[in-house]
Amino acid sequence: MSLLLKNGQVCYNDELQNLDILIEDNKIKKIDKNIPDGPHEVKDCAGLTIFPGFIDTHVHFREPGHPKKETLESGSRAAVIGGITGIFEMPNTSPITDNLDALNDKLSRAKDNMHCNYAFYFGATNENSDKLDFLKGFDGCCGVKMFVGSSTGDLLVKDDFYIEQVIKNSPRIVSIHSEDEDMLMSRKSTIEEGNVKSHYKWRSVDCAVSSTKKLIELSNKYKKNIHILHITTKDEVDYVRDKKPTQTTLETTPQHLSLYAPDIYDQLDTFAQINPPIRTKEHSDGIWKGVKDNLISIIGSDHSPHTIEEKKQPYPKSPSGMPGTQTIGLIMTDYFLKGKINLKKLVELLCINPCKIFGIKNRGALEVGHIADLTIYKLNQKFTIKDEWIESNCGWTPFNGTNIDVSPFGTIIGGKIVVWNQELILKSSGKPYSFN
Image (cartoon, rainbow, N blue to C red):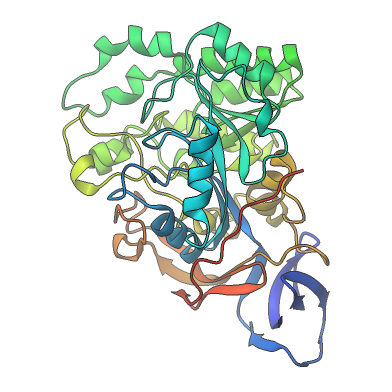
């Protein structure tokens, strides 16, 4: 089977160029001008921009356990409608993914059921902290996830001994929710019932910074790779700028780049509640500086859906989390169009660095021989993000009503057209990622 994409604006060698792309046997066969028609399926891509496939390395799809919030099918449908070609899914499901049987169960559920490519995190616990060797070379598993501060679900490694054990013993990169659990517990008195603005005061800057400093020290001590998720403070970025750790990478999210306290809590109330929290604008500005200074390597959505009914509960009964996998590519591409990041940076954050840091084979750039995962948008085309457009089972987005200058269009996965003209036309085509 072959597919020829004609007349598109292609993201190639850090530039947008008018080129054709020929795909054969799920790989990119040729990128050139005026590739002749042949016995191929031909798609005229005039007016469309073709990127390497965007990857969302941080989602919570809630299966097994909470299908009303999300399933692997509904979450991956949301992803591909938004142009995402693959995801890394988190282990704080019910039951948690902290043993081989649970990991294989997720892989079995995903097979022939997910619309995008996928990999699953293995959840670190005290009990398995010295039993992680089997993950070496395990396809379909992107690494180890460790919660050192409590969030949604039951996964938690809070004692320094076990935190050190996980980092020391993991044969794969350890991605970490970094908040100091002892500080969180000691500060619970700052929670004000009915006042969601107390959320970011309870889960303070110091809770994040203290934890992140400790994790970086352990990474340095054992010369092991760690990836600190959803950075929320300028202080953490400044610490990495100062210390220059060689085996620590950082992620942030579109919501921590785009939203800030206290305004967002006035606008969205408990729908703005996430862990770690959205903080004041000085922190959003500091994180942006970290992106521009190459201190933040990846943007992940931290897609964490809850139903509208759950989110409407008064704080602190309201659960933390918001959806994001359907909007992450569009929001970050809109930042490119607005001049906040350049094209090279956009592709690094969503394509190249996820593949490089986690070791995904044969993906991340539009190159001959790479697997043909492609994100296709209409640039400079007005689009309004609306709750009604969201495919997630949760049915809402914190970006409802946001106007952007990029419109979703198509998603190609493994050389197959999965979404075209914003419609899902090929179901369940996702495959597990292979890792170096």
